[in-house]
Picture 1 (cartoon, each protein chain N blue to C red):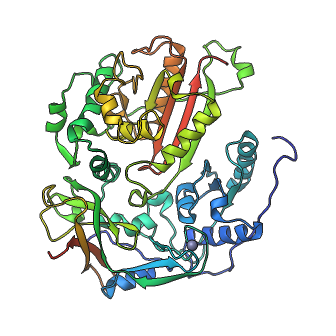
Picture 2: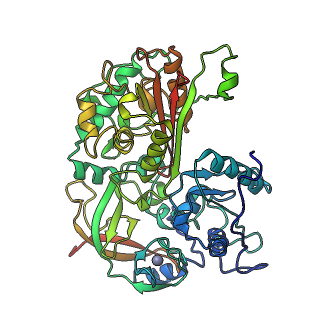
Picture 3: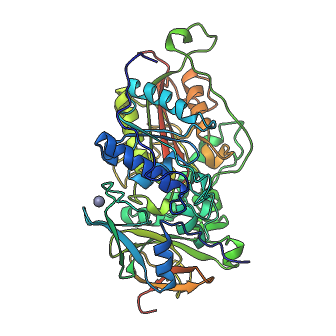
Length: 382
Length: 134
Ligand SMILES: [Zn+2]
């Protein structure tokens, strides 16, 4: 921590104290936040970093109408907010964001709207009230809801969606650790079991077991380690909404756009500098949104880009070279595996190695378009 | 199996009271005038606490959807739509499209829809949408 580099400019508690039976947990967060914003002379849109514990920072940001480039959900008990302050100071010093809002709210006595952590847990959360009653059964029937709008806007067909899975299976065929390696055709995908129209089973990620871990240290120290270092060139993050129905635009993910732009800006690279790309593919439409929202394709052009084999073996932008969540593996929070493949590619040890890969991007999604993180890796210190 | 139902909070009670009374109630900011959803006691656009409730037209169009082929037990056994409608006032909300076959042929994107309420308990009626004129 750099001494005296960061200061508190707004501070307030909830309007009422003691027994507040007329305000829910998220309402307490918002009430304290609005009071602190008034204290600082700021509006919610002036905030570009959020941190909270107990509730999800995604829920907090969306409830208040904040589009952050920094979101901290560190939850380690009652001292979480001290950790938030520390992380926020580092984030501000590092240029990840400028102004961080840290909130707490708890209906400890009245238990109004308690639960509902991460938006989906309780019947009193906003998604519990305004989405759950309509029958969504997890990601297959929720994450998929925006796609018909995207398809109509861009003239994208079910065959185009199927092609995403077909090309990724070609990559998986080169990967001995991939769960599925048998070649598939567009017809195979369209003939597979209907899950949530227009999504068939082969357009949905696998459900497997597994894990991953990364170890980071300073670039200074990295050269003393046995493995070839993979440097962090740029990073981005954002959150949009815990409710897929409340996405600003069903044709594009705001969290993807904000996170991707920040990562490119930090890294100071052009799209043509990128040798290898990982886009978290929980479902077949994610690579389409990712390619467009990260700026590799213009809006509506990603399906054509994939059909023309630009992301396939030998293409100019190798994508999801481990086979992806659709064919490699997906244990639930796949972002870790996307980064593992980026590291393998930049160490030069991937089963489907991209020749001379120097810059790799791993782009992840959290929840159903709720959150996003983007990491630009390089094997050159630059 | 009983339908999964919302648990209103003080900030959303007016919406569910409205559904029970057969009205779709939205909120708008008296400063920037924008209508918004889901309910909260301040404007998500400008942060103003000066907001009011109003009765929406209940009309809109089908914005996007899926047809879930693996229904949750409380929604029966037949494939059904899980949809998002865009209201004439601007906000979007999740719903089920009722009053028509649950097929891609019947569920046309951009078709006009109107709200219809169904009671599930003494306190809760859910807003569904049906093709206009169904
Ligand atoms: Zn306003």
